[in-house]
Image 1 (cartoon, rainbow, N blue to C red):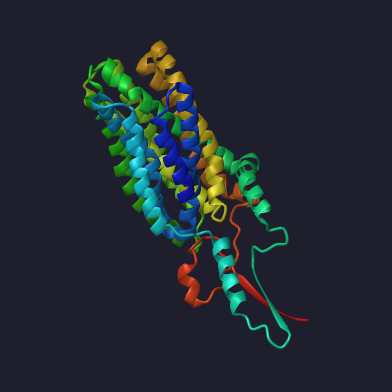
Image 2 (image 1 turned 90 degrees about the vertical axis):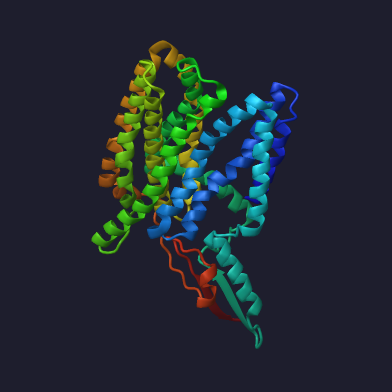
Length: 408
């Protein structure tokens, strides 16, 4: 991941020196390639490091950043653009990324269990006594004859697409998250139009209204992170002390209600030119609904595909990224034709139609769908010495190192 962060920093800095629109588009594309890695593997790291009973709070912090960043960014960017040039919008983010890069070099460590076990196996091989014609074979549960860098890269590149094509649970959650993420970016691009066109606020002051969306994200995220784990432990105790990914679904229920409520309140308040605080309250409700749904889906996916969590989240994120690109494109035309009230009412009806049945259906049929998966809930046993336990990920998918005695 530090390598891809470096790629992002280089090309993001280059964006500030672009001499044409085409150069800027190419540099932004290359910067996006580098910046995509942390989003792709972050969920997998959380699945490796935290146990299921503790994973909710970790997800609460991790999932907040990708949503809070686009809220803080436009607010800061508005003031920078007003006082300086757009180039410093790019360069300021690169400065922050360099700090993150330096921190990562010191604090980020490998967490993927197969890699850690392979390293442990190599250490054991180096210490084996090969005297008296004996030969010891040390292998991990993941060893196979075709485990080469070509097969590893091939699987890593194709597994997200295989998950999306073959896994029903990934398709369902991918569509719902795509809609939610599309709404998020729709609001990010329409907030300036609302407060400059209707409430006649300048770019700097108007950008402060992003704080309402950010407040809903931050407060709800931390409250939900704590209670998500509490609910999980309670339901686990009622289920014979056996945890299920479906125990993450209760968080989707309030989120599926808050999201359309916020859409209706913000849309009709802006349409009727009511006090701006009502629009901000609606934005806060939208932020709360977004983060509840986002965290619930992410934690459910990590719990379901623990060993392949990064690939599963990448598969779910495919439609999410497309929706984040597509929704802001049709938003101006929709609001110009229908107004903010009717436009948000249509979106609220879609949010109810997609969101309200989702927790109920997944609670009832989620386990049945998971049981037919080729990737979900693959449990193997860890047998490592106590001295190495501290370096082993506390993952829901556990592994083992096997040592066999062979004589020639």
